[in-house]
Image: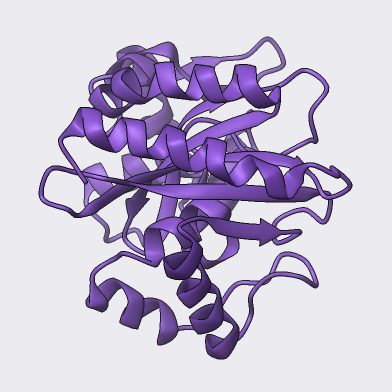
Length: 247
């Protein structure tokens, strides 16, 4: 970000500096992460705090404010889908007692819009609002297998981010993975984001037959029943698709 960016772009850049690894940031850290002068960051922070987009913390830092949560709840791509999907996700959770996730596509990434966490399930790097590349997640592979050709081409045209030794890292690996999703109806992602996680995901379709989301469970790689969860995940995804008017 440069000093010549618009006022709005700089303010949004301040908000974008926060992520799951940086939930609280001090002024100097915001300046470092945005590349803006500290005086400029301070002016934006004052406005953002006044509006409610940021909150002050007792330690002298800043965090995302509750007004952002309220605004995000009105997102039409998230809330209606969550309302429809949540009963099916709860059924899937009761059947498996594992982490259950719902994600939507956004460009070449997926964004998680709902997450049911199991108390004793495998640890995952997922929370509502988290963004991950499609190729590296079960929900992403389930969506990508049925995505428009231009989205697929864009992913194949760029380097694939690698998070573990098991992350899909070459176009050939990705082609094979997508063909397997279309063959069996679910995506399997083993150890791609964390080596301990094994994800089973299935696509959700909208009324026009387009893929609009995916639902998944994440179980430990050591789970001896992991292959048996595919029908349950597929049933949940099909149920959501029917409620949305999809196939």
